[in-house]
Length: 186
Image 1: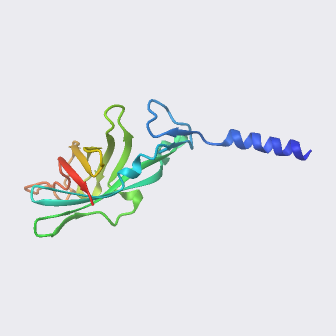
Image 2: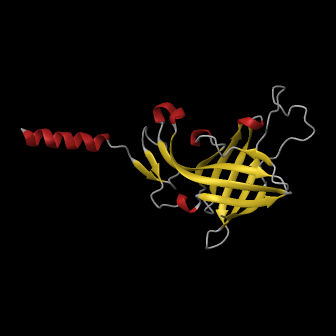
Image 3: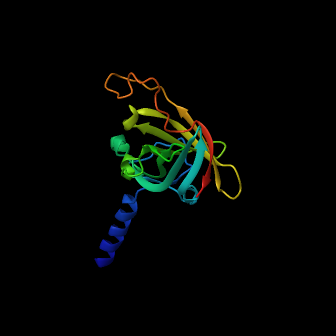
C-alpha cells in the first residue's frame, strides 16, 4: 500500500510541475505558472553598471536580472527571467537631472521583454510615470567580444501630454535617455 501511495504521489507531482521554456522561445502562449528561464545564462553578461555621455549629460545605467511574474495575464500568468534597468543622469556640473535608482525592482522604469528573433538584440520597454508616462522601446547589444561595450538605441513612443502633466506647457520636454549611445561597463 505504501508503494502505491508513493507512486501516486510522484505521478501527481510530475503532472503538477510547471513547464520551463528557454529565454529565446518565441511564438508560444505560455501555460499558467510556466517559467521562461535564462537556461543559457545570457542575462548576467548585461548585469552591472554602464556609463555613457551624450549632449553634455552623463548616464549611469544599472541592469539587474530578476525573476518576474506576469500576473496581469490572469489565466496565462507565467514567470520569466528578464533584465530591469535603473538610471541616473547628471549634467556637466554633476547636478542630478534624473534618478530612479532607488525605486523597487517592480517599479523599475526599464523592463526587459527578451531577445529579438534575429540579430541577438535584447528588447526592453520604458515607461516613466515621473515624466508624464513617457515611453518607448530600447534595444541593446554588445559591440565587442569582451562584452564591455553596449550599443543602446532608444525609440521614443507617442506621448500624450495632458494638462495634469507638469511639463504640459514647458518650452522643452525633458529627455532623460539618449537616443543612441555606446555604453561602457564600469
